[in-house]
Length: 387
Image 1: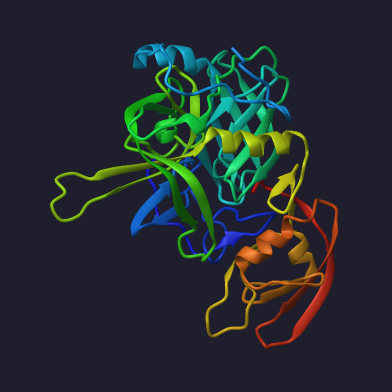
Image 2: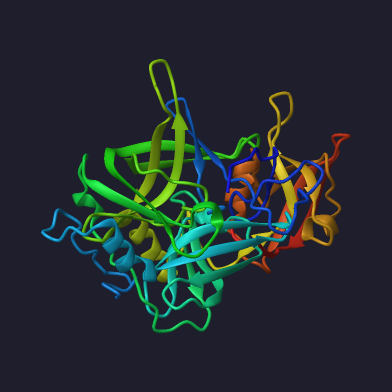
């Protein structure tokens, strides 16, 4: 699935959510896969890729096995045979956009705990996961997510006896180390695609930014490789030659310049130690300023940061019919300036503040209409799509 331009807005919820048009959710054919966020690093444009036997259980105190150089070096074919049964295809239905987003996930427990990128499920109103080990498709619930780390944990409903991936130790990864990336390239499902390469750089930082919306987030400590990744590969494994997962495929780009014969590949993955640490907190229901547990609170507004010539706040582009915001009288063209006693300075801050609430919570919302008149209303947060 190819990346396309996103419209300049975001559906508000507990964290940055799906882009759509300024007049409302972008209409699309049922098979539409929505565009992913882009990353800016060192002048290159990078694209998020979603919308593409148990060695341990994901429990607090678990320690990943060593991913260092081992005497066991498997061929790509052998790696696929070993790892594929522990992978899943993730398809997120985007109810507010009339589309879908596809990605990949790792099975971390026989009972169906799945590790993936947060942006794979960003904006999902329902999630279906197909386990490659048994071929069954499950409904998935969001256990929790961390937007700042771009990590999410899903729980497959009614799953048992699943084959799992073997997790390695990303602290042992070195530049030049051979790697293989697997994933759901193009969102086509079925047998995972594969790409061999090597680690080119460690500890890389990139900025994830929704095109046009002004919402962005920093991802740090990433592993850079020259393995080719495509849309749909997000949440897939980056493997060492022993078949252990050393990182979570997350973003990629291609760039060219003077003297460059062909596009240079830059792929980025979250070290598995960091991803696992976040996932353990999620499974333990250890909420924090960045980790959200369970379903998301939802106001039902499409927002973007206000322009420099306007007062700070989150500008409303559209409102979901029947949502808490609509019931409060908020309309397109108005600016949300506060939630409770907290000032809303931008669309990103609105999303961050919403992360503190759960469905059913009462929220006092303050906004300014197009005539400059201030309004305040108390709403009950609805259950929203995943962040």
